[in-house]
Amino acid sequence: MLAAPCAAGAIDRPLVAFQVASAFVMMCLLSSATYLFNDVRDREQDRLHPQKRLRPVAAGECSPRAALGAAAVFACAGLALGAAIRPELAAVGGCYLALTGAYSVWLRHVVVLDILAIAAGFVLRAVAGGVASDIYLSRWFVIVTGCCAIFLVAAKRYAELREHAGPDASAASPAPDSKAPSAPGRATLRRYSLGHLRLVLLAAAAIAVVAYTGWAFTRPAHVLWYGLSIVPLLLWLGRYANLVGTGAGQAPEELILRDRVLLGLGAAWSVLFLGGIYVGG
Image 1 (spheres, rainbow, N blue to C red):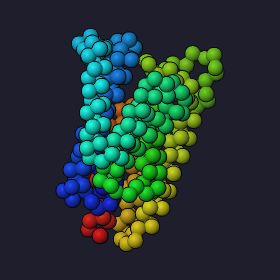
Image 2 (cartoon, rainbow, N blue to C red; image 1 turned 30 degrees about the vertical axis):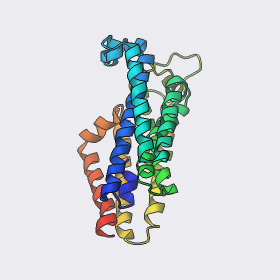
Image 3 (tube, helix red, strand yellow; image 1 turned 120 degrees about the horizontal axis):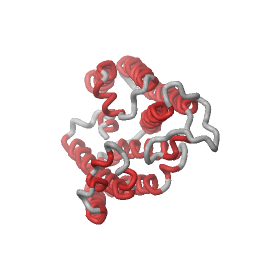
């Protein structure tokens, strides 16, 4: 959500900071509504999962009716906040609710579309930051954000499939009548293959780097800062892919925060990226 305002060098403006913070609160409310709706729909399956069975709805600590009521309140509050900041922001919030609702009901059961739907949700979060502060979103921004999101989601699917199929699983797609193992509550997992997911990872990373490079070398000034920032980005994606290949990646946030190399590369990229905006600019 900070990406667009930071790239535009406007995040240090008080009004922009307030608008982005408001957009963040809006997306938190809408995400909470989505999670509550999912928890109600998945409560029977969650009760069979060793960790998810502890969720309030699955554990019986919160009734489905109360959860759905809270979801409706959060959704309405989020959209109202978005409309108060900027009508276009409320429209982005509405698209996010429609997308996540479609994912919960249908898209998560469709191969490929489940990955694209989750990635689109991340893109809408990033777009919300730009829309809230009325900052122009270039095609480079959308492409890089979208491809990086697809990379992370595909990596998560790869790690899940690798765990349930075993580290020596064949890269070939399972036969239609085979009983390939799948994660609880994720029937589409058995229809993926490690080989196909590796191709998605490679393609998403390659397009993201190419698009980011195109953006970096079309800056009107201080190309050196932006050009150098390509290196840690490329190394970060390579490091992440390597860790996923060893079986990590089911919880992207944990992997990113626990791996010192990823943290170091992320810090290096941030210094170069922000340096090009604020120091070089």
